Image (cartoon, rainbow, N blue to C red; front, top):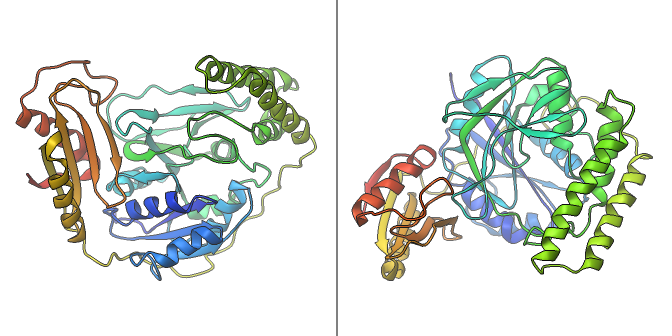
Length: 416
């Protein structure tokens, strides 16, 4: 399969710093033909203009409304790739993200693809693969191994694509009219997934197509994931059930969702993050949204036309030169990170693994300087599935972590 041209669409609002980090990660993608489409408010577009690696190299679309569906459609209208891939502004892709994500499209039945999402720890998965039903119920789909799998579910169900890690054939998504703008936030992907499933399309599940999701604060939640406003959740749920549920009773799934949100808020209250009055106040926003959602008309989405501008292939200022792994003791951090920074400036993808003589769990992140850094104990776990303590020699542990990230970051051309 010849690598299809891909348009990567990033929607951003009120988070210019997060957008800058996301772009830094996108600039390190190892893929032969992709463009970047940034849909953002004025502050976000200013970031694009002030980053020398991206000014004039990406498509910028001005958009400043609190409506994720409409923003994604604005990006779709500008996208000229055969495939459109979406990532959130508070996420960073692994360098081989697109190479893996497009593999499913070799099957002509496939119209959508999704991968795994890594949470704030940088080593544990936040989302793997789930299905969604016409009643807005989600459940985990069993997945074994890391091979791409093509799925078609039964009537009233669909594979759920994660909004920060999903791709579609442009002609299919545009033909459906893109995302329904009645979903300002929440369930907009599930709506598209069900419409694609109803039209007979399959979805590719690609475990190695991975992005790191930071869960940045927004008008709806704090940076510790405490919900502060559930209005859009309640409203979108009402729209979704009115549009998709074949059962006349839509109050039962709504009560179940409200109960789930209540339990999450109570857990935060018990942990001391919020007070009892915050639980009551936030649930009232859900109730208000549920009521308003009954009056909100879902869109009869019209097809989106051809791209508004030709394909603009992204070309980094410095050619990519491969993956380098740097190992070090915790006390060597300053020198190892400086070496990583210099290698990044020469076009390398760099992973720095810094180990302390402890069993401390590992954490990883993409640094603003452009390298990946993983810290933890020599004997500690690098993920929830590993033993809490395990004996290691330093060289062997560096080799273990090198092998773990190689499938998503590339086999290292050098290890130091």
